[in-house]
Image (tube, rainbow, N blue to C red; front, side, top):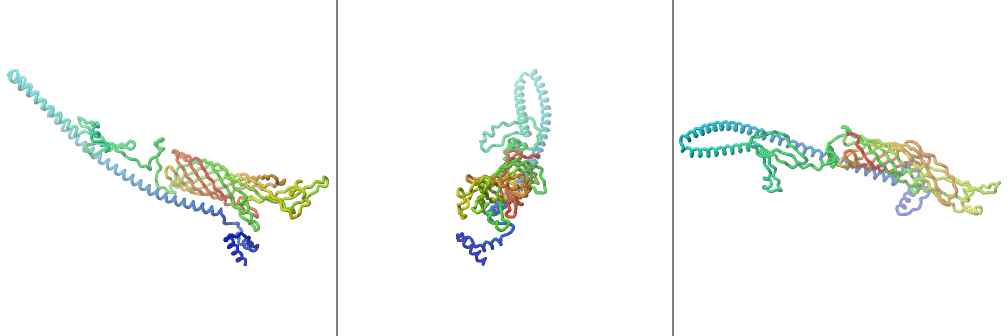
Length: 519
């Protein structure tokens, strides 16, 4: 019969009816509830969505890592091919230089032999001139013959000079610019060429490069051309303008068993939003969690911390830190005074009346008692003539609960570099030590004069798990900006008694500056 009533109740709930089930049905429901206090509600949906988002981020990170590995392999292949082509060019340049050296040496030998034969020829001509001079003295008609001979000698000297110039041009280097496609032929040929009248011994050197240009020796007449060498965009770094030694990120495939050497210091401020999950511990306390959900509100609180990180390879980072946090909640708890609970005490000496009544305040940190022994009549004048069926007096008690605690988070993160950004995702444990707690009360205007007993202070050390993602942006070679949203759920209850159990959970956003300590 209880199962039928229970089915009917849920059908009415789906149809929009809100009648409460009979007590027998409530007893059946409460008997089926887990004694551990587990209740599926919107907080678990929030946690489920967070876990799904973290899983999606991890999946995207793995995909990006695969893409990065492929890009790294492609870049290494391009570098290898480029180095091979450079070595081939150097070999060709070496062969061309050797050929030029052989040609130059052969030309030198020919010039030496030519100079020797010319000296012999000049000596013979000088001897002939001396003989002709003698003939002119003896024969006046020989003057015309001497003029003709000198003209012939000047012509032969001009031929020999032209021959030497041609030989030097063949043996020496000629430096000419590489024709620019954007200029005309006349502009490129107007560049000054340097010709040597004597053979130039060629020297072999490595191709020089300056910036995006490099000098490449060619095989055609030992020309040297100035060629444009474009740089890959992935290797350009804005920090290289400030520090030439700073280059772009290295796309190297590294694994967990290849430890890194870099240490990082992260100084940050943070904003915390901590809420609580209250579950019932005993029968009859099921209404307390729902009541507190409508009453207590968590506040955003500040915090600060310092974290030290160590690279474990290029893809993982181990961190440990210390941070100061707060958890503040405010609530407006309703209280009421029932006519039957008020006792009137008459002082026989003075004849004055004293009204005694009390009650309790339920919160996520437990319950506390309030009472009044003042002369104020909560029901107003004419209390003695009131009916026992008079409506209760209701008022609100404002409470502010605050917990200060020190956290030591330990986390392992996966690191993905996408210059100039760095993305991380990971999680770990957090040890939270309570430094102090307080609960302050205020009463609204018109409330009775109450005395509220202090609540037992919360102290101890608690464990929590945490998970989050982060993004870093490099602003210099050593410093980066970091934004780190994370989730933290307490694994041990911060408050527990025979009625309720309280487990805090919340989110935190850390923002600060990272400084790389090691070189």
